[in-house]
Image 1 (cartoon, helix red, strand yellow):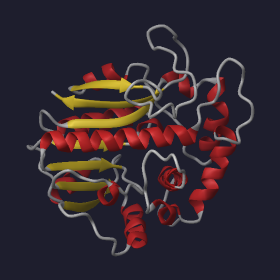
Image 2 (tube, one colour; image 1 turned 30 degrees about the horizontal axis):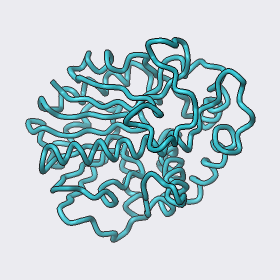
Image 3 (cartoon, helix red, strand yellow; image 1 turned 45 degrees about the horizontal axis):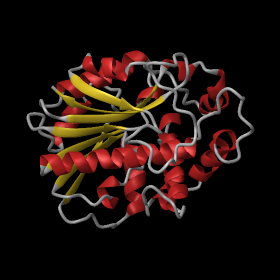
Image 4 (cartoon, rainbow, N blue to C red; image 1 turned 45 degrees about the vertical axis):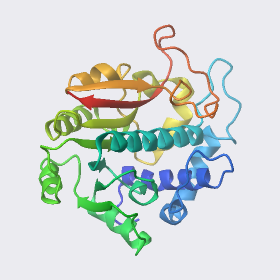
Length: 292
């Protein structure tokens, strides 16, 4: 894909995962646009990941299975869908910023309870590809979608966001999905600091994260090797997302898939060791918080 770097190509993997989920009779959500957005590359990426972490995965080590990527993506998507809809229902007309938006179609597919203004931030080539695929697809009534062609790792991208109509003095909702673990720690922290500086008190922020053990665990090695071979290695994790976000003025809660609020009828089939009782195991988190 012209103009897509290694990390940007993972957006096509996410689209392929969402297409697979949409085809399931027990799906946690529906994304009718995902098949087209996955293009030709997405299914190939999905096939590789599914071989090491999906239904086709080899028998796991007795002590710990490799987490199922398909289930994790389904839970993450549904969790963040619910987060956004709840935030909008609580706040009324809302401005939403989706960082590294990739092939995200929430502007089109979610049943927004009131008016929303959605800012999708990503590299111009990625947004242009998505717009070309979606063509003249109509947005739901009350939804305004604004694309912001900018690189989140290049200083000054918030100027482009404000130029597109974002008002940093108003409370907002931010989504950083499938992003932080691809960044070196310094850049991840710089991004969180920029988000904090660009949000009014009461704004809400959500993302997904892994812990530090996930980056070095033998259990995770087959999956991490795939992403490293693609040129998009996982680089950053935190064992205490709540403390990390608190450094940037965000009062946050981290939930593991399979815990209350992120279970969805037992869809997460892998163990969920309690954080306060079982140290040194790999974990994934859905994190959400409020700017104080």
